[in-house]
Length: 492
Image (cartoon, rainbow, N blue to C red; front, side, top):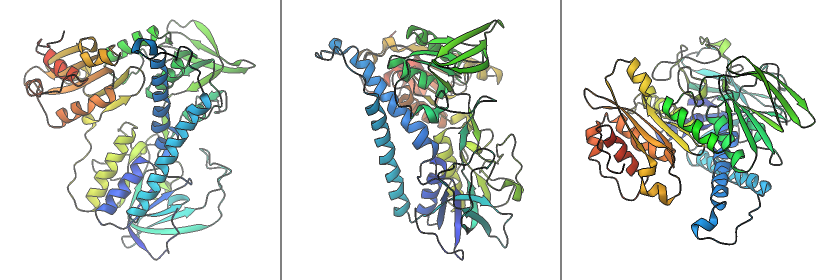
């Protein structure tokens, strides 16, 4: 971290939080010539995404993908790997190496862009005086992490940082079931990323992106995996057809999935934990597992950033903003997981940061459009989606026309031995505009980028049908997907 700057310095913008939203905002603001400071309460930049979320989980998912391919090495013409051995220590080591590399990369970018970094916990102190905000930065006792009630926080020294504008990017915490505390048996995404050995069995409570991704990892490595979901279907935010396909494929992988179930209690025992739940009929059932992962969402980390000192009233912990990420306190912005009404995704926070930085610098910017945000889930098979689901489009009154193309008809999917899933296109029958695209299958999280662009540019199905896609590629599935809306897919 950089040396503390004298209190007399007035920054153009101070950002509280060094995750993807915060550091992206800071870098872009600095690129535009603004004087920037960033406050991070831990000793490393990157936030949950880099250290406990997006990056480490995807590193483990890649290891799991390689492991799955090794199971069929002979089929690919590779002999001598009939009995591969899982080295869990090295799985974690590679994950940690990736984190370390990108942490150092962020430190370099701060220096390159001349961003002053303060190490400590930043808090607003009140409204701007003479157009200048004052933020206190308090040293944190790293040996006693602050919990949700603000305990375990030792005030050692206080530095005042002054700025014309403040951006709150404080991130979120994994939610835990009421009455339980995360430990080595009942875990959140944070604890499970550091377990010292592969569990033989795992129960995952929740089937959002976090839940199904970890279920995929541990199933690939040989654990007996179960998912318990309270809602009627898994990955509930996705199009219903995506949920049905993932459920089918998870059952094919011997992942036990129970939907419409309510967890009643978790009791730790010598073998791990016993989970008691009521199924969709109300019948009480139990599951025993070595480990339990609670993946029921994330809570905004706004409980200790000084909102009580300014004109910002959180809504269930979330901060409401206008389209330019401005709060109800002049000169104070909010971005990332703490913003109400936006999905808690790293790429959403980062784009919000770019919007704020551009706006503050007087440069071109446009607000984040909720319907043009890609959703990506990195389980096997992957899920990528953007725009309206079929149900949402009908609810909005569109005359809906849908096309679907299965990956089994795509030659590259056969080559990479991953031909489960499909591309589903939702369009407006009247004008042909692409309203939504939903993909489950190989590299769906990469393929969705083209679809985001199409929707961003308000493309029609007809225009996408005459956009040339290279052969053989997985992206050809999109050409057939768009063509399928008109019943003209070639490869099916």
